[in-house]
Image 1 (spheres, rainbow, N blue to C red):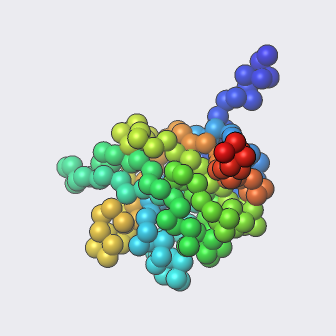
Image 2 (cartoon, one colour; image 1 turned 45 degrees about the vertical axis):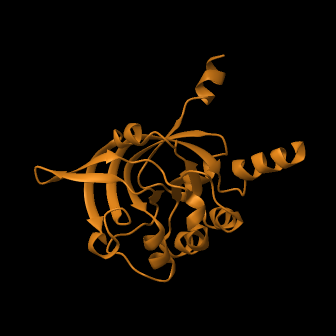
Amino acid sequence: MAENQKSKMPTTLTYPFTRKEIRKLKVGERVLLSGRIFTGRDRLHKFMAEGGRTSISLKNGAIYHCGPVVIREKAKWSVRAAGPTTSIREEPYMAAIIKQHGLTVIIGKGGMGEGTLQACRRYGCVYLHAVGGAAQVLADTVKNVSGVYFRDTFGPTEALWELEVADFPCLVTMDAHGHSLHAAIAKRSEARI
């Protein structure tokens, strides 16, 4: 019984998120992330996939499909909402970003397509599903905003925000072994219809 309860405990990962750790994760596993993660949306993904460079490294890092609500208070940034945005919009860019930038973790909602799944398998990356509709709860895991990049270029929602998080809750829905919970659910749904 104790072993069964232990196996249901979330896996804790702290940045940097190494390929060795990432390859141990399986679809359906709960994860708590701590340390540095970056946000990014459509304009940033297109820029990076087309060879655009950033002044920071994403190697062994995480990109969160999120346009956080961030305000300036007493000369410090404060995250008020940090809910996930739909990830499939980034499908045309994600495989190139994983390969070019050494990314090991993608966070978002709704899953991604076959190109991203194969890049995850080939390069050792996972897709983690964050709960939609929980923007305030997820914002509470953000302990610090360490930086913001491309704010003047892409605007505050599309900027690359560097966040320090503690126990950010996620679920592995695409693993580094080519398994996708999204594809499995779609297949079962089609069979029932």
